[in-house]
Length: 401
Image (cartoon, rainbow, N blue to C red; front, side, top):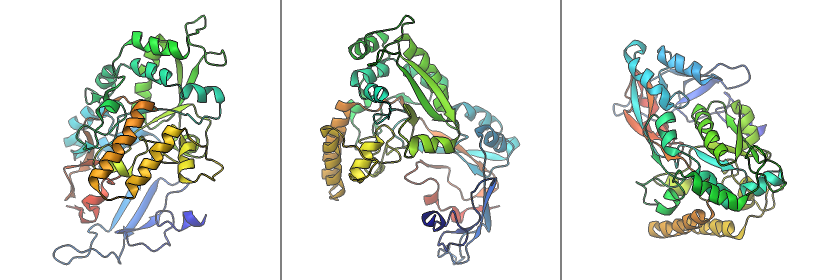
């Protein structure tokens, strides 16, 4: 409770040096979070005028992405990118700019992949845990993904097939990690899957180590419509090689509890983000080894061990993973750029050998909408959690005109 109440974005009474001070916080039943100008904000413009320019701002809350899409099309949102900018929505947003009195801005991708497929190697179900840890199983499934179809159908032609890896423009780019096992080839898929689990039931689905049909449940935040669309296509091609999956959608709060929280029952999930370019490759290594207890969804117990070996949530990882952790500690201990690159390459070499996370594609450019009345806003900015978009563009200098 103390940690919750001391945060200025939860408690209006907490002093802050942010441009705006919270008035109506997020909470049960809240539909609109509001904030007012902070009279003690320290920044001024070149003419000596105290910032921010805008006296108030508000964030509309919605449980359905389509509600936000409609609000955007109707000109009810001044600035929005996440949750509305699915590739399939771009054409309608583009065509409606004059009517909605907004324009599109460009977001350059920085994430490691459009959709990372994450099997839970620490699942409480011992059968799922064993299946998730089988490398031949994961390689086989990777060869059974038609990435070109995903890009054409779901990402409307934007993107390039890729595994989960630093982006090509990054100095940390690792070609083997990015390009291995990408070919859509059901014969190859079956070869690897036959090594892992050759026996099948009467319907042609593979049997797991317990002799029962392998049936994996993907738990997905219902707001991530792109993942749902991708998994519906993947489900069909994986069925052709004898692997059954089902997609279970849920609201964000439940997903946070089930997948990001201290729950280890989920079989698998999908997510984005991670450091794909710039220094974020080192600062956010959640997909290079199990480093983040909340975001390394494929092995959170190993991440707990890295952060606190004595935690009751921790589980000692395999030796290869412990080597990655030790290498990352060396990265943290040096400011030498060349040395950091050498150390990270060793981490990525091991990750390429282990292949714990399956990727789909590198992102193409994203987009967002900005009301025409909102001035001094950027036309191009990184799409990045680490940046963090749009804060470094100084929204305190935006104004209504």
